[in-house]
Length: 614
Image 1 (cartoon, one colour):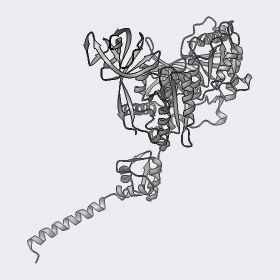
Image 2 (cartoon, rainbow, N blue to C red; image 1 turned 30 degrees about the horizontal axis):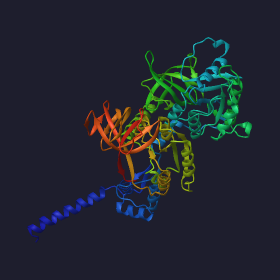
Image 3 (cartoon, helix red, strand yellow; image 1 turned 180 degrees about the vertical axis):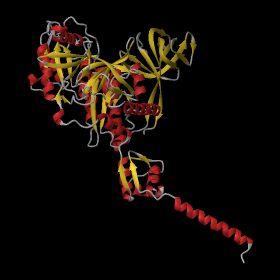
Image 4 (cartoon, helix red, strand yellow; image 1 turned 90 degrees about the horizontal axis):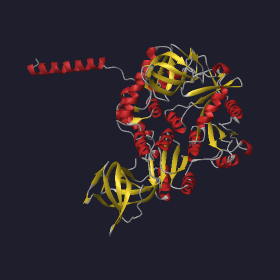
C-alpha cells in the first residue's frame, strides 16, 4: 500500500507531467518561414526563426558579422543567415518602398510618352540682368490676344515661340534652386546662366555654375548687356572656360549667346539654343495617367487660403483630383495658369496655381494624385509620423568623422567638399592637393571653391549634396553657422594646409584623430580703438551676439578673413575687470600679443572641446 506522502507527491508529479504534456501539445510549432522587409534586430530574427539567439549569433560570426542580441543587421545579411539556417525567406518591401511603389505606379511604356516643353531656370550674379532678361522674353513672346492682360506671379511662365513652348521658373537664383534640390526635387531640365558682358565672371556666377553642375543640369550661357560700349564677350568666354564651360565656337559643348535685355538683341537665338538643347535631352512624359509634380511656390492667401504653384512632371492634373503634397492632403478646387486664367486641366511641364490645400505645403514637396482619399490620407499620416520621429532622432548630414564608417557600409562613395579660402591662390592649391587623395574606394570631389567667409549658400549646397565645408583662414557667417547646426552640416576650420590634407587622408582611411569642436560663444564689433600705456591697443566693442568670456579664445575677423587667432588679454566694463559680457552691452577687449585692432573688426570668441572621432 502507498503511504499518504507517496500518494500526495505522486499525484502532484502526475499532474505536473500532464500539464507539461498539455503545454507541449498547445505550443506553436517552430516557425521556419520568415518575413524580412528591412534591417532587423538579432533577437527579433531569432524569434521569427524560432531558434536560440546564441545559435543565430554563431551563424553570424561564421559569416564574419560580429553581433550582439540588440545589434541591427541589414536586410541582405538577415536573408543569407536565415536561408543558411534552413528557413524559407519572404522578402517584403519596406513601408517607404511600398509607399514609393504606390506613388510612382507602373512604369510608363515607351509608346505612351509624348514630347513635353523644357523647364528652364535662369541663374547668375546679382545685377547681371536675370529679371530684365526674363521680362524681355515674356513681353516679346505673349500673343496678340494676351497683350495688355494682367500677368499673375505664380513662380513660373510659359513662353510660346515658333509653335513650341518653354517654361521659365522665376527663382531668385541658385539659393532657391539648391533649396529645392535639398528636398529631393529635380524640376529643372536646363539652366540659363546670365553673365554681364561688361563685368564678366563674378563670385555668384561661379556659385551658379557649381550648383548647376552638382545637380547635373546642362547650361546655356546668355552673355547679356551687349548694347554697352564696354561689352567684351571674348573675355566672358575666356573666364568661363576656366570654370569648365567651353564655348561651342572654341570646340566645346556649351552654347553661349550674346544678348541684350534692353534692346532685345539675340533673344530669338537664345530661345533657339534652349530648344536645341531640349531636343538633345529628348524630354518626354506620359500625359494619360494620374498627375505627379513638384510644389514650386506656396503661400497663405488672405482671400483664398493656402495656395501653391505646382509644376506637373507627368500625367494630367484636373479639377476635382485628390492629391497629396508632402504630408498635406486635399482636393483640387480650382486651377489657374500663369496668366491668371482658370483652366480645367494641366499636362506635363505646365505650371498651375492649385486651390484646395488644407494647409500650406513646403516648396520642393512632391505633388501626387490618388484615385481615392483613403490612400492619400494613409501615406500622408505615415510621412507625418516619420518626420516627427526623424526630427526627434535628429537626422544628420555627413560628417568627416562618420565618413569612413559610411564608406564601409557602402552608403557613400564620394567625399564631396565645398572649399572657402581667404585668397584664390590658397583655394586653388588646397583643391589640387585634396583631389590627389582620391583612391579606388572613395573619390574626393570639390563641388564649389570660393573666396571669402562661409555663407548660407555654401551650407545649402553642402546640405543638398551631402558635402563637408572646409574653411581655410576664413570665418563663418552667423546665419550660415546657425543653418549648419540645424541641418547638421560639418564645417571644418583650418589655418594650415597640411592639417586639411591630413584630416581628409585620415577620413579616407578611417584613422581620424579626435577633433576639437569649436563652440562659438559670442561676437563683438570694434567701434572704437584706445591706446593704453603698457597694455597696447584695446578695442571698444559692442557685443552683437552671444556673450564674451574672459577665458575664451578670440579671433579677429576683418572683411570676412581671419587676421589673428589668440587669447583675450583683458576684458573690462568701464574700469572694472569682468568675467563675461552679454549681448547688447559695451566692453573693452585687449588681445594678447596683438595691437593691430581697427574699427569695424569683428572679435569672435570661442572655446574648443575635444570630441572623440566616431
